[in-house]
Image (tube, rainbow, N blue to C red; front, side, top):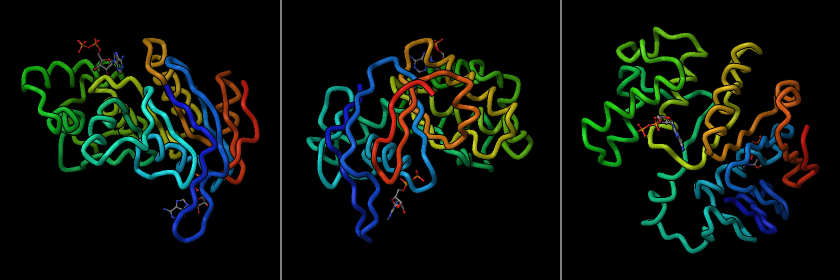
Length: 221
Ligand code: ADP
Ligand code: ADP
């Protein structure tokens, strides 16, 4: 599903995001990316989404070398990927329903299909009863679940998350991770960048540890 071959990323200001990184993630895996702040976790995710391009080496996603993607192809790539951010980036002047519906509206899904899909996604994250609420009325954990519903509403094959539990206490963090495991169980490939080592250690998934853009370890934590 994802293959990095000797990937380096140097930013225009000279910062080294990744340094000769190689790894392979198969379809259906659930993998943590960990390492200190600045280790290259976000850079790795941005390269998968084609938000950044490698300085050297090759990134393959779904059998395709991203080097071969033109700007017209990137929306198609992104439709196969769901992304969850730490600060969930919800629109606070829209209801929960409208926030989750956004990716479907953007890709032109018919209205009756939008309603069905949004409710299915909200049901998966346990928030069906909140579809008419505004995000401000929800707890931090609920807001993050809305972010996850929005990330999966178009049924992506690949789910990426960047520090998805960064603002949550340990109990809510565990609930969020359990949701990711649910999606993984139905076949979604899940990649989570996190520096929450105690949480990662409890879950026993493959963990790639980065240090200064290099792969320090690859195994179950
Ligand atoms: P992490 O997510 O593990 O904290 P990042 O991928 O954000 O690490 O950062 C890795 C390195 O790349 C750091 O040295 C950081 O300063 C640098 N970096 C990240 N994004 C940019 C950017 N847009 N411009 C310049 N340097 C960047
Ligand atoms: P549908 O009736 O649209 O086929 P499902 O009952 O199969 O919906 O799934 C409902 C919700 O579960 C989806 O909107 C999505 O949030 C999530 N889901 C199910 N399967 C997948 C998948 N393969 N990839 C991502 N999300 C999925």
